[in-house]
Length: 169
Image (cartoon, rainbow, N blue to C red; front, side):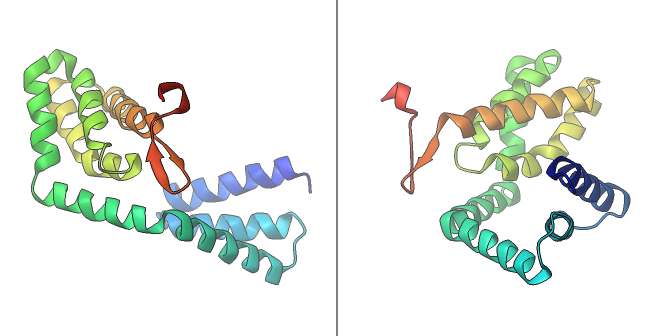
């Protein structure tokens, strides 16, 4: 089967399992990887070996950073620090500029926390601010994502350390 078709089939599996069947995202990714490997013509044992090897390499490289980022995110969420930050930013710029406030809050929150964890932490706030300011959730979600990812891409991983991009050195 052509690899493009295998890829599209894998995306369809992920979307179906996560949105329609409400399966955990990790399980959906593993199922899609298994199906894609088999459709690409790999032997079942080879597919499983490649999945476990790839996963272990990823965890080996960034696992501790992700775990500490999630822990820090949980502390920020439990202390309501992220909520206070975002609501304070909205108060500073006004409700009409809530999308800008979400971008700034995302930018700041993403400094100590990975952008994906920051989105999960701040997602309930998007809903609350959208209702209060009467702005579409999608606008605030995209603004939040832009702020989170802006911080994320300003720093790159180089030899196990985060540093400024080469153009800034």
